[in-house]
Image (cartoon, rainbow, N blue to C red; front, side, top):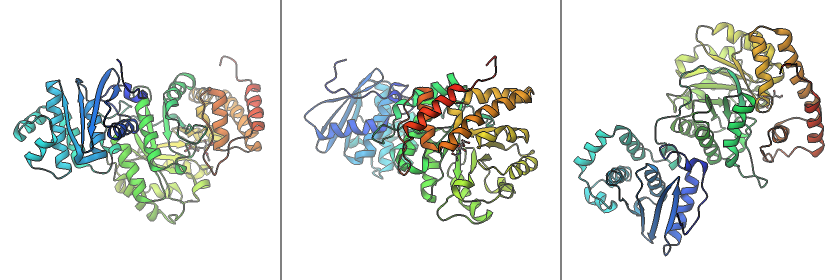
Amino acid sequence: MNLPHRWHRSPCLCRSAAEYGDLMLLHKVLNCAFEKPEEEHHLALGDEDISCASSPQFLELNADTTSEAFLIVMAAAVELWGDVVGGATSRNLRMRELLDILLWAVCVKNKTNTSEERTALSATSLGKEAALKLLQEEPRRWKIAKRWALKSEGVFTTLVVGDSSSMTPGKKLQGLVAATITPMTPDGQINLLVIRQYVDYLVSKQNVKSVFVNGTTGEGLSLSIQERKRLAEEWVCQGKDKLDHVIIQVGALSLPESQELARHAAAIGASGIAVIAPFFFKPTNKDELIAFLEKVASEAPAVPFYYYHIPPLTGVKIRVEELLDGIKERIPTFQGVKFSSTDLLDLAQCINKNEREQFAFLYGVDEQLLSALAIGADGAVGSTYNYLGGKTNLMLQAFAKPDLALARKYQFLTGEFLSFAIKLGFGVAQTKAVMTFVSGIPMGPPRLPLIAASEEFIVKAKAKLDSIVWPKGD
Ligand SMILES: CC(=O)N[C@@H]([C@@H](O)[C@H](O)[C@H](O)CO)[C@@H](O)CC(=O)C(=O)O
């Protein structure tokens, strides 16, 4: 295909159009089309070609496509320019009808509900009755159109088409969950392009099939809301059919931001959300904390909810045992806790008291995981499972067997590395460096106020890791 302009091909865009659109890219393309009306612009969506032409007040999109990709483009355009979107046509008859429905939905959204306006907006015209009939015949598309029509708060929450992700629905979260690192380019932008490779690496080299996105390791609280959404989208998109669980950490200092992220996570089909306690104005007791969590959880009423307990960083030391008392009545979606505290008495009490509830308890202090397993933790969320997931999985297997001597061996060895690294100064920046040299995937620098790991750290950490002799048969 000979395109006058070559647009980047996003891995997401090249996937089925019934999944997600790379909206940043679409915005760019459509902006360009609008700014340079004399040129015809083409957008490649997988194998499909969509042309965009515009006049100062008008934007037209044309395609032969039969896919929903075109609908995605339209929605992006509508979100950008609202009423000025002039028309959309497709030479495919069915698609033309569907576009008409979409434009009708847009009219509803923009409260321009007369049929004249609808007709003016649309290149084709279909009576409202006929459109409704068609919508009834197309329940899934109707759902999409309705979502577009009803939601008005930004394109990212509105553009999930197709059913929610294929990630294991309802399966209890257990085993190892990688607390994902946020890859960045050398100039500090989020590097979405490596997420696909990252997913493949975790699955194939570390045997880790669940991820926890935008947490501590992912510098979630140092990212903008938009960045967090994009990252979440990319993980859900790339994890589809590969990962069991993509949990999105949606906690923020402000309740509305946290709610917005929760709605977004639900809309993109995340398999769970986790919420860290706000830590500037901190909740000082259980009631205050639950009130906050409840408000966030209720924005994603069909999505499993996890509390992210990490007192060393938040300073919120409310005991989880206390928090869990009656939590299901306040948060019906409550499913468990990511427990990043060394207070194993609290963890043990949680597990002991909540056996009946089947909550999941995921431990978050990697160097002490074996102790947590011994008291009944279901698994772990942590930074080291990015690059030591394979070894830690062998520890989990040995524990399950049970071969405690072997399990201890693995814990001692991972602990040996961490203890060495902690003495050198270990945190998210160093995790990024270690993951880079172990996996070969560039994780880039951390975001200020964190600063990149020193060369000295990298050399020493690598030598230490290489020197470890893992048990035979591994
Ligand atoms: C304070 C901290 O960063 N803790 C890490 C651990 O995985 C930690 O890196 C590891 O135990 C090494 O100390 C995780 O609990 C954090 C985590 O899961 C997350 O990124 O959300």
